[in-house]
Figure 1 (spheres, rainbow, N blue to C red):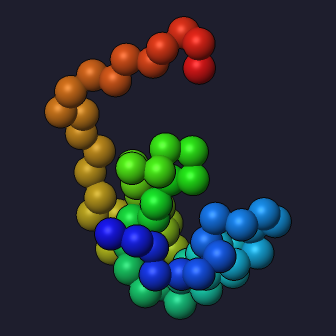
Figure 2: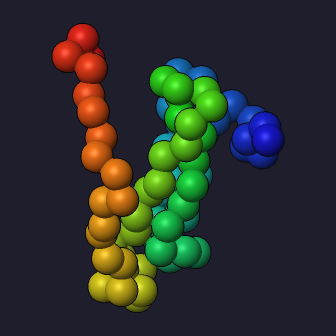
Figure 3: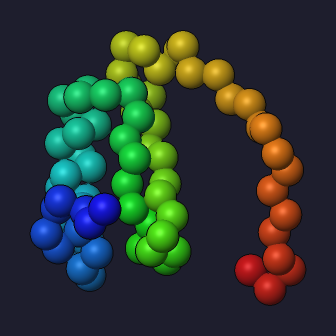
Length: 71
């Protein structure tokens, strides 16, 4: 689906930065799924360490990540 924040991918990143800063300060959620600017079909997960539920997050790796040496 299309992102619902107009201007999220513009430079300078004032729109997305402003949204992210507000999200972090208001502690709306412990995680925020955001679209990737680089890989338009992918998403990134932002984790808010200031959120009360941050300590409940556990990292796990279900499959290895292989980085292409060109990256």
